[in-house]
Length: 274
Ligand SMILES: NC(=O)c1ccc[n+]([C@@H]2O[C@H](COP(=O)([O-])OP(=O)(O)OC[C@H]3O[C@@H](n4cnc5c(N)ncnc54)[C@H](OP(=O)(O)O)[C@@H]3O)[C@@H](O)[C@H]2O)c1
Image (cartoon, rainbow, N blue to C red; front, side, top):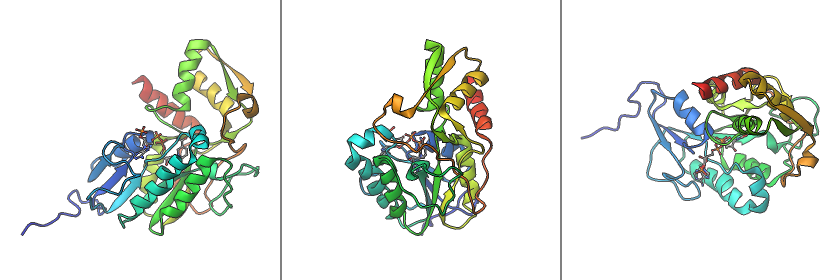
């Protein structure tokens, strides 16, 4: 008789399924969990709006999501199909999961960091779908709220600023929204540490905080790009989805700590240069 080997590489964790494996975080998770028994599925492998494939993981790192914040305003149903329905499908696998949520579940009216027990009150369709997704993740879940995720791949603020800064020499950037932009590699490493903590909501974002304009200035400074930041308001930018003016996340329950956002930026730029 053949036996299923539940933990062939001896981590004590068994097989780990990563959804959204082609995204920024999905890729960073594959790196952080390299050497473990990982099955990484891109959208082409499993569109999470469809029922799960025949798989028996011991743990799911659910990084697939609709992340187009402005697009969700125009198409909230499709966004919900992915962020809520997709998460329900993941939970149907019946094993522990990590669900990634967002600082955009908060309305930004606080002036000090949001902690796990603060009541969510999303301003945008995206924020609402992510909040409902938290509910769909079920009881056996670590709900990880993070913020402004970027990496050396994918479409993100850091790569957009490098491109625009080099091309135009001046970039208009929002100066009245403050958060803690988080490097995907640091979030993936912190996820690994989190698995020793109880299920529940956890805030995992970079230490420190900045506005998007300050972040853009740091990007140009660290990357040696000769470009200037013109400070504008979110109203001037006029994007479809409202975003919180203040969404700095901190943990009140001893979440794994992430490096400062500037260290995350340096780590990302090193990878981009390498
Ligand atoms: N990015 C941020 O600033 C940010 C901030 C806070 C929290 N989060 C959360 O962090 C998590 C990871 O985000 P990320 O930054 O890695 O986003 P990302 O780079 O946009 O990756 C999301 C991945 O999900 C995939 N996906 C979309 N719809 C899918 C579907 N129906 N079935 C399967 N896969 C699907 C995308 O594939 P395609 O590219 O092919 O569509 C993409 O590879 C998400 O839960 C997000 O909500 C993100």
